[in-house]
Amino acid sequence: MSEVAVETKAPNTFDPEAFALNIAKAMESSGQALAAYLKPRENGEARDKPPNEVNEIIKTFSTVANYWLSDDKRSAELQIKLGRAYLDLWGSAMHRMAGEEAKPAIEPPPRDKRFADPEWKSNQFFDFIMQAYLLTTKWAQELVDNAEGLDEHTRKKAEFYVQQIANALAPSNFVMTNPEVLRETVASNGSNLVRGMGMLVEDIEAGHGSLRIRQSDPANLEVGVNMATTAGKVIFQNEIMQLIQYQPATENVLSTPLLIVPPWINKFYILDLKPEKSFVKWCVDQGITVFLISWVNPDKRLGNKTFEDYMKEGPLAAMDVIEQVTGEMTVHTVGYCVGGTLLATTLAWLAEKRRVRVASATFLATQVDFSHAGDLLVFVDEQQISALEKDMQATGVLEGSKMAMAFNMLRSNDLIWAYVVSNYLKGKQPSAFDLLHWNSDATRMPAANHSFYLRNCYLENKLSSGKMVIDNTRLDLSRVKVPVYNLATREDHIAPAESVLYGSQFFGGPVKYVLSGSGHIAGVINPPAAGKYQYWTNDASHAETVADWMKTAQEHAGSWWPNWREWLSGIDGEQVPARSVGTEALPPLEDAPGSYVRVRA
Image (cartoon, rainbow, N blue to C red):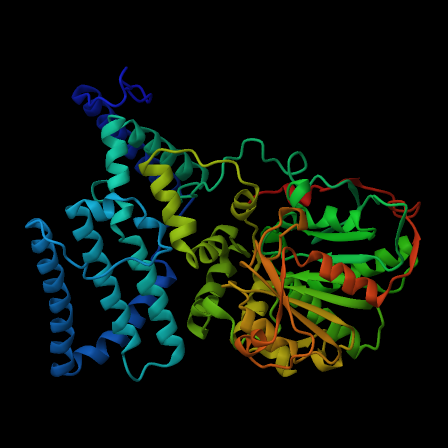
């Protein structure tokens, strides 16, 4: 049977024969999707076992259920509350059927894109389905909110799991209960489902038996061709990183070079997307000698690489190379996300060793204290980490797809279900979007490194408390005296603004806390030319919460980048003639962006 969808000459005219053929083709493709899922399991390439999260969900929900079902009165009140909500909905629906005006029992939040189509309200069937879903979701959320005696971690996990289940079961995710999808299916005689099921097969095959949801069209998005194109050379490499030096774009540059330490959970080119969005290019154009670490995408062979190895073979090795190339003992530094956590660790280690190697530190959406670490804390407790360590022991690494899924689940409606509906139900190929292409370009993590990070930072919070030990050296952030520019983003779910502000107090030198609009990515990657968002400063404030800090903060339109550049000049404004890339002793090895960043998981 051909995989090409049958289209009619008049696409707005329903053709039963074409519809029947397309439904048959879609069902055939769904069979192919099942075959693509089963093939690696039949070949022994993949083995299924219940995800560790299933045990956590059962255990967490059992704790909540025990509170409500252990008392007959509470249990009865629970059923009465949901029954009353459904009766209100039924009454409202009856009034509408009689042609009367009726106030809805519940309405979706204004920013909920799932129910934006007008037919969710104009069509009584879809309106009823939507309200029933919203009432049930609200009831389930209140079960968790009102359960007494839960510890905070269990409550957070229960809230998260309820939200994930509710998002998955939304009527917008199914053909027959999504008016927009249903209209498209009828109008196209089901050709949308043929295209969608075809993409589903491709995405399961691309994931080697697991669904790898495409978020962007990879056409015209190639690293080194359309992204990460800032001119430069790899001048050094070891097992875990390549060091890139970028070609100067100005006659003179700051005398103190800049070292950027990106996260290894993702690839560095989030900082060097298309030229108009590139933070790296902007820095070069501002007269800064830029060096950047490009982390390896590790395999099992590197599974024993530790957090200490990443410090020594990452920023410390880079500083030595930069000194050889530029003759400068000190560098300005920028650390992003976990790269910033590693940078803070490195600064504390240098302070304990009395080594002066850093002139300033800029932290982008970085946590050094994990008391307020946000939604990711739901994945962190002794049982979950132990289970993850057991899995990593077998493979030597944490597969990038698992970490990517964890991040996507923090915004599952936007990063998972929106693409399920658009790709597989509407049959629409996603557009080419550099940021989402980067988001899907996941990296693996060495087991030893990731275990240390989870335990010492998220679980035991040792860095800020002065209990972390690296290289037999106890670290104390209060000994870090260099000036710090500490950027948080207002809508960050990964490094919440509250957590970043709280972490500012642990450094021993001057800290400039700046709050950017938007979230973990868009709030950081916000080029001035775009004229988007805003940022806030408040140099005089010593507030302990973001809410109090904001009361006297000054709002500035646009990007925080120029403010940071001005801050950097205030530390060291001396300039020297632009430097050539590499030296005779350290000749260029290959063109930027290098080979490490091109290895896909």
